[in-house]
Amino acid sequence: MGIDAEMLVRTRQQFTPREVRNLSVDLVEAFGTDTFLLIPDWVPDEYYENEFTPPADAPGRHALRLIKFYQQDGPDIHPESGESFIELSLMGRYYGEGYERGSITTYLAIAEWLEQRIPDARVFYGGDSSGVLAEQFDRAARERIFAHFCRVGHKPYRGGFGISVFDKTLGGHPACGFCGPRMTETGGSRDYSFYSCGSCEAKVVRHHATGECEAVTHEDKRNDRFMSGFSVAAKRLMSRLGKEG
Image (cartoon, rainbow, N blue to C red):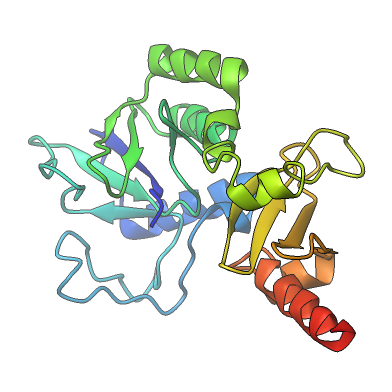
């Protein structure tokens, strides 16, 4: 299970739920619906004890929402007297040193946007699991993580699978037909592996025994968003090999 990105705004300005909803609309228009988890019929249950029940004039779960306190995989953070907490519903993996996965450039821009739009905002950034706690995401912190990103990008995470015994037998990872460099293994099963190009995001499935590859199409990605199209392409590859066999 991966680590999802979390972001919190601490401010002494008092907001109504409707004002936060309106600000959320502007945020989503600026960064796109794919950046946030939006649930129109959201009603928190007892598990979400830090959530307010959405009012009738601002229903559902938006990109921004007022919360009673901030829950994380560690000590909860409670507001000081006169302080409001606004949490973001980000839709993406965390990015940090040792876990270079999510879209840090998007998170950096969101933090800047929040500071521009919310008076005296203090932005905190962290993960939802694995003990990745929220830390203040001020300009100095953002400059440090951006410098790290410029040095390594996503390479540490994307290279995490290394070279398997199947790759060695087949001469290494397959190369991207468009960009040239070898692709990165991102998962698979006992029969095949998934590979992705870190530049153009081309994806292929390669069969371990035969070395046969099947490209992931745009239609595959649309029909299989959870697995980025890999499972659809894998089924097509196995079906093709079965017919050929």
